[in-house]
Length: 180
Image (cartoon, rainbow, N blue to C red; front, top):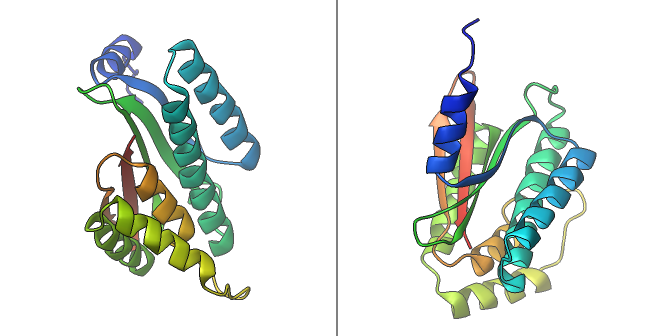
């Protein structure tokens, strides 16, 4: 195995303004620990309280969705891995990105949901959120890409972005990006 150049990786993280990066199997306790580290970092950086709360909420929503999805699928630890990055863009805004392995059909459905939300303004997103809240929940049905995704879109300062990279055996890698 080739030795990793940590200095070059560090320089790339600094250049891309990456504040936090995680790649691997994700558990409830790990989500909590990384969340605490993120909260402390945002506090030390004197992030505006509303931005810090939104970044934290989006991070939690994305990572919990990945964890629940993998658990519902009954996937192994390796299949349940996630990649999560919190960074800053050139305008100083926070960017929360998360990706994970999905069944391709589920990923395509998620892309469609993200694209439909991308066309909505703040007033329409609020109305969609309220409408979703009023819908009866079917306890037997997995409810992916519902209220949580709308909430992420509401907290974002620009439309959500998602991509799907097709892998093998009906699986793909789904990436979701929110700018706060």
